[in-house]
Length: 553
Ligand code: HAS
Ligand code: CU
Image 1: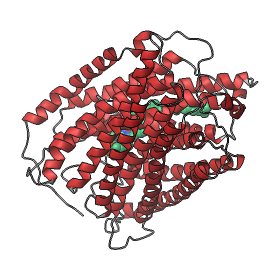
Image 2: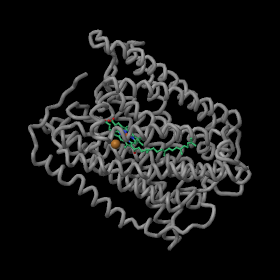
Image 3: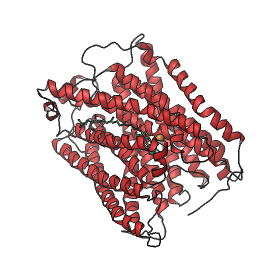
Image 4: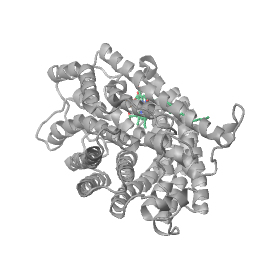
């Protein structure tokens, strides 16, 4: 049914499709390498394999974190959002937007290459958080800076398309997909400023030897000022797929336009001034300021609860319209054998315990139990590695055919279902073991060790093997995914595939205030100054003797 309709509609024009595909394929190349590194480190930590002497655990861990968390996500997000903005503003990006898109792609790819080369040369085993005083080669930081600056051009492409649309459609509310993409990139532009400051003014001069020491507290504060909104930068595009694309895939509607926009505005406002929830155990920040960040963290949970509510509402109303009766009859009517629905749905299921775990992390006292343990690693594998990643996979199964003018065949769909099951079982086993071990005190960011055969650490080993086994399943799923996506790019039968964009069922009135950017950006700046102004001023003035660089590998 979708395919028939699609022939009558403009999807995405060829030049935008090429741009979008260029982003998506770098994303999946990084993903494949990252998955290999991930499996290896699981095996090492489980005591199943030993690495050859020319590499080490921390080098592979850095490769995994950087390629998966920073490269795969950023490229995929830009590729996806550019295609959706094109689709919902008439089917193409104008010349300037495409120019921004390609400029960004080139800058990001140079940056990525620099970072990857330094990691491969074993000159940057500093993990994806590149915490000082671990010191990488300056080229690593310069590569990271190029990645960030390049990604801004992706933002410029979105903003310029939005501006053009607004000029041509005065007085109208922008399409939901565009609004959400703009919100995501406003968040990204603001959130990347502090990390740009950290990299340009602290890490690069220090790694070049121009300055002899570094203010550690300040560098970590600037990092998490960016690091928390970073995780929402991953989540919001997944939410776009949930709010805008998924309802269409299941044959339903957007539940509420205003609620969706309000959720995104709330994510924008409350996901930046919360970085101290990553630094609750650090000295040098007084408890009062940490408390403020904890409260704001609990507030940023609300838009996710609104999202859960909207998803349930969309699923239930659609299921009932398809004839589902009784309390749960609608549930059976959902398209369970359609991977475009199934993969993101499983992602949502993962997000329920993931969100609960996040609330545990954010609760000051409980953070003392889990901080720096492998529980946190478990938390982020079921958030970004499951909820977000499964959604991105689900999107890829239709987006790549849209962009290549091909179709998702029944066999590819079935293989996608198998892939989803492998990924989910692997992630479930691995993350469950991580959460459990974390509660026992097993640390994160640590290679294989039995702590001189300490009885407790020896007991951990069984669970570490479960982690390794889960990692093995994830690797199989990753290979399978790349094969399916390769097939969809180059070999699947030609045809028209619909870009699923849902609308509200009836015309809804959305308050215009939701699109008044000066208001929201103003409130956001105020919140940031309130949450960060004083603590940062304090860290700048009470600057203890900084740290010289360390290379621990
Ligand atoms: Fe987190 C650490 C708190 C969400 C990622 N987090 C991390 C790190 C990463 C990460 C990468 O407060 C590690 C960073 C590092 O390397 O050190 N996190 C939270 C909280 C939330 C949260 C409160 N995190 C995320 C998301 C991530 C992510 C999303 C990635 C995408 N996190 C923390 C804290 C730490 C932390 C502390 C520091 C820990 C430490 O000590 O180091 C919340 O925003 C979560 C809200 C989510 C919900 C769930 C809503 C559920 C939904 C699904 C509905 C399902 C449906 C299905 C509809 C409340 C929307 C229908 C079902 C049927 C059965 C029909
Ligand atoms: Cu956070």
